[in-house]
Amino acid sequence: MLGIADMYGLDGLKEVAIYILKRDYCNFFQKPVPGKQQPVLECMAIAHSVGVESLYAACMKWVGKHFAKCLSERSFASLPAELQNNCLVMLIKSLVSSM
Image (cartoon, rainbow, N blue to C red; front, top):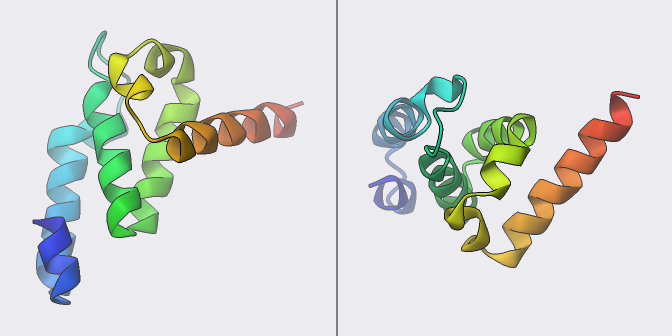
């Protein structure tokens, strides 16, 4: 639905789709539930493919914060190499900036 809304320039529908992804997939980026990081990783891939930078950045921030749990997910291994590398780069930047 997000892709179709983006393709046809339906901004209202796009915002609704982003809200639903945040609510249903990402649980509004709360603390992770054991074994439930897959939806956020899927949402990150969707946001990247459609080009929704705000949602992609929020997913990346959450993954960086909970990277150890996300890394052990099978869905992390199935992400495209570009997204895996982006996660690692973001994690390294966050570690360096916190020093």
